[in-house]
Image 1 (cartoon, rainbow, N blue to C red):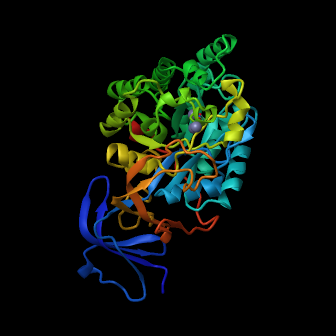
Image 2 (cartoon, helix red, strand yellow; image 1 turned 135 degrees about the vertical axis):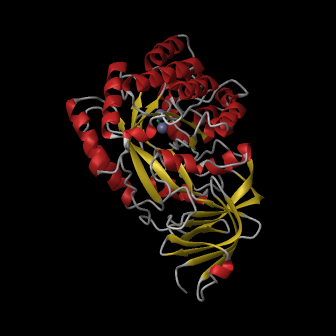
Length: 463
Ligand code: DUC
Ligand code: ZN
Ligand code: ZN
Ligand code: ZN
């Protein structure tokens, strides 16, 4: 039997069209035909999938992961193998991770380290963003090399993590100018790091040591202020901006307002599966490990309506995409912050369950936007002739219950534990190979490829 695949009776759902009762022919990892069966009859000796009664959708894109990231003196336990296994099991067939250099480290050197970690382990294609964690003439020069020669066309700057990764406003201004000049997209982690440092000190002095202190030190207005400031700097420097992990209603409103003022092709906002599927009440759970497992930055919010409002804003195009920020730590690792919430390693799971959570909470997916914004479209994010054969047969009639007992992560906790999701990625095809069938994962480490992403011409972002 050949390695090619024929999908029949497919209802193909792209962002702009639905084609009912069509056939898809996949050859050598690429979609070669979509149309009626009589125009392309089933070849002999080929794997045939009957997709009757299901949706056939492009494989998901998670634009925000941190596999095996060193954070707070320990390493995230999902490495590029287990992280991409979890992704594929959940219907995500492309991830974009962040190179995060240490302060003072060459960003080119950090890039090579990330490539080396990922290349031999990934089971789906992946791209990289690069964080700018310190600012110098050398970093300025290397950004252009990354953009022109290494396939990095998005750079993330931190407005939080004072003393570690944080840049001040004049550094943000200069990095944004640099992004603009090399045709890259600027990204920000928007939280006011100075205020967080003050609040943290005060809370600890007053005896607030538990995970609830994490939420109390990084309030919604602290996120919204930084979001607005980043948008203003983007406008001042004429540099397109993507705000990662928008976790609160107030910050999302800042993104929406900036889009109204300065253009829908100029400011973009991403929210997280965690923000749509988990609640900020978890920080007050009686069980310390349970509460600590939900610690990520920015944190989950106390306002009850946050999840619904963020989902609505995603549907209205006030926000454009969802990531997972997958950065998983085991209970034991979280204990680094047993006596001090500010030492709890930040991060949660999400790369596996992101698509199911969005489907369950909102009834759709948003694969197209991430593909467009990160210059992967139409090779990724579409089911069209010539696109990569990253295909999900989505059984919307079936249900699954999310659990640590069945997930594919390396971590011992799942923040969506017990959530029943209507919608199951029944078959997942990655690069023309069936990697998930009947709940079983069949993958090869290193089978995914690095996706170089070209820099943009800045004018295409102008509104
Ligand atoms: N936030 C997290 O929760 N983890 C890793 C980095 C970040 O910004
Ligand atoms: Zn961040
Ligand atoms: Zn618990
Ligand atoms: Zn992140």
